[in-house]
Amino acid sequence: MSVASAFEYCAARVRQLDYENFLCALFLPREHRPAALALRAFNAETASALGATKDPQLALVRLRWWRDVVDAAHGAGAEIPDHPVAIALRAVLEQTGSIGSARTKRWLRRVADARVRDAELGLENLTPSSIAFLEAYAEATSSSVLYLQLDLAGVRDTNADHAASHLGKALGIVNVLRGTAHHAKQRRCYLPLDVCAKHGAVVEDVYRGNGTEPIKDAAHEVASVAKAHLDSARGMAERLKRTRREWSLKPETVFLPAIAASTYLERLETVDFDPFHPLLARPRAPLATQAKIAWAALTGKY
Image (cartoon, rainbow, N blue to C red; front, side, top):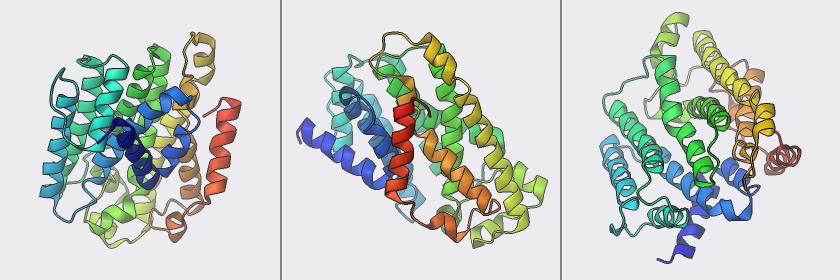
């Protein structure tokens, strides 16, 4: 497969599995879009592996394969599997001079390793033990993708990384909240055990899709943690503008996914934090979503 075809596949895959991030990528400078779409395709492939099969063991095998892909992509002269996302990742690393980079390899491995651990928990039918566990998972996955986008574009700045850490945690937590109904059908629950115990929420009710008051209270607490991280990331915006150097990529364009996270949290609040409410399952109007992201990009906000 050609590199051009590999990037086309990545764009199509992100559009299919992660539409909001696909829209956000369109507002990046043209030269930075291929890297962003390759990273988002890798993230989407690993994030969807567990939900794409009824057998967690098969998902685990697939995720371990992706971990091997990360190692191969960073090895000079190493053979790359004939998979379009793997080919695109290798091309991005070559174009940015990142072959052998300890930074990019560490962050890509963090994503793959976190997905592997998630699949292992799924095999044992275990629920995250605490908010701190959920935050660590979000940091390892969503924050790592943001770090990678910044790094590959040459944006290496403490303030940008600080904002990416908070935003990634917000995005990761929102993603698991958004997936509550889907996960429940597979008998998976991401509402942490300590939060469930605090509010008297029963995990079996989650599996049944029952939006009980205790489950709403638990979802509210988890959503509040996501909102706090989102606010912290947004609170860095002015500092980023003051310290911005001559980068070809503005950090705030990388942080546009904050718009979708904020929108979901607002919708969740309107249904009294019931993660199973039918309103949350309705597809969002594409034009409205595009307009919100476009306005944020135009005004330099996220």
